[in-house]
Structures are given as C-alpha cells and as structure tokens.
Length: 327
Ligand code: PBG
Image (cartoon, rainbow, N blue to C red):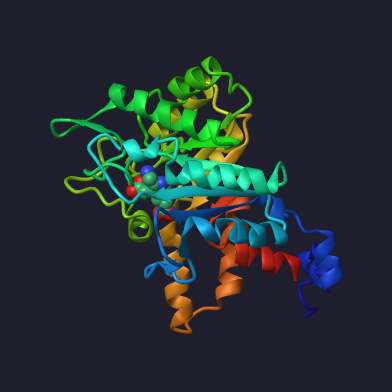
C-alpha cells in the first residue's frame, strides 16, 4: 500500500527564512508604535514604577532626553501622562497653563518641532482628590460638568503644542465637547484620538501605581464599558465616529482582539489599540521568573494586535519593540 500523499503542501512556503519573509502577511513597523511617557511635577530624579519594570516617572528636566531616545529608535509618537504635585476636587492641575503636561509638551515642541507626534491623555483621575475620571456631584461622577473640564484640559494641552489629544475619561459626548472647544478657539488642526471602547479592567492596576490615580471610593463601572458587552463597545466607537473623532481606540488590547477586529471591519477610521499596564506586567513578571522569553512573547502579542486590525499600538514595550524591529 502506498503512502497517502497530500495533494496540497503548505510547508513549501515555510522551507527557509527568505521564503517565509516573502509570504509574510502581517507586518509591523516602528511607525505603528506610540510610546507612553510619565512626567511628574517637582520630581527630583527618575523613579522606577515597581509594578511596571523598566518604566519610569520622569522629572521635567529629563523629558527632552527621554523623547530624544524614543525618536532615535524611529518611534513617531509619544503619549504624555502627567502626575501633579497636588490634587483637588476639580482637578485644576489638569488644565493649568503651567501644569506638568503643558510644560512638558511645550518643551518637547520647542526641541523637536514636527519630528515627534505629541499625544496627551485627557483625563482627571490623576488630578482629582477622588481619583475619578470626572467631576463629582455628591458621590455621582457628573457627566456634563466633566465635559466642560475635559474641554478645558484639551484646550490647554492644544495651546501648549500637543498634536493629538486623547480623552480617556469615558464621559458621554467627550469627543463632541472637545471638538467644539478646539474648533472654537482656533485649534481645528489638533486631532482627537479617543479611548473610545475603554473597558472597566483590572489590567489597569499597575498603571495606577505609575500615575497615582486609583479611585478613592467605588470603582469605574459607571463610566467604563463592561467586558461582557461587545455590542455596547461598538456603540461607543459609533458615537465617537459620529462626533468627529480622528482615531478610535480599543482598550485593553490583548483580551479584546475580537473588538479590534470588529472595529476594523465596521469603521473606516484609523484604529488604535492600547496594550495596557497589566498586559505589560504579566509579560515582565513571567520573564523575570525565567518562564518565558520576553522579546519573543512581546513580539507575538504585539503582532497579534496588528493582525486583529490595529493600525497603531500604545504600548510600554514601544522602545523594546523598536529595538527588536531595528535589529
Ligand atoms: C486614566 C487612564 C488609565 C489608563 C490610561 N488612562 C487608568 C484607568 O482608567 O483606571 C490605564 C492605562 C494602563 O493601564 O496602562 N483614565
């Protein structure tokens, strides 16, 4: 009896590296990376974030140097997060003209001109004494008064030289409110990348260490999307698109690949994905134990996010991935 010959052989195209390169479907470039940068007001020297190995909070004086190292790797964009010295009820530090993000953005703009895309987080949780992403009315996070504050934050960041503001507060109507405010004040060329489908997630916990923004009571369930509701996530994206968003986002990324794929299929706007702090910490933690190969796992995860349909990825691995790609 003769051996049963396969009539189709997929292994032909896998036989050596050049052949595999030729048929590679999903590609990844440094141009797909957005690197988060944490700047802390009145910080003396760089401080490591315990739950996010290799990630640092920077003093203002170190920001230019850090952005230079990001630029040298070929990464086109940064995402600025500020940690203010003082918090208050209204999160005033978030929209102060001399706030930490505003200062950092204007320094970066001065030093780098158009050679770095500056994005900035538009939210309140680092700045409010409650640690919530909006303004309180009693114990309720008040949607519409929060919109006014979010608009002020976006305006002050635009005035300091930010290219793209990135609201992450998950208030209804935040894109429209910010778009109107920007247009009214002559910032029609400043874009909006909304954290459109931002889920209530325990994957954010390490970030709360980095940015000191844990809610002081309750949780974020009244404003962030439940991870059980994919249709609701699509309604969030739909709303942002109808309000004139430039780039939508699915967040977190790794446990939400289905939603990245759906967003890619259904909407003709650029899609970003935020591979969040917990995704980073899982890899770093296991790598530290010697249980996985950090670089290979990092690449496999980030490629999977692109394969799902993301055009760009915010990731704490941005610099490491750029080094990997440049190798
Ligand atoms: C602030 C904000 C958070 C993250 C980004 N912006 C925290 C939160 O919503 O609790 C999380 C990012 C990460 O985990 O890497 N609204």
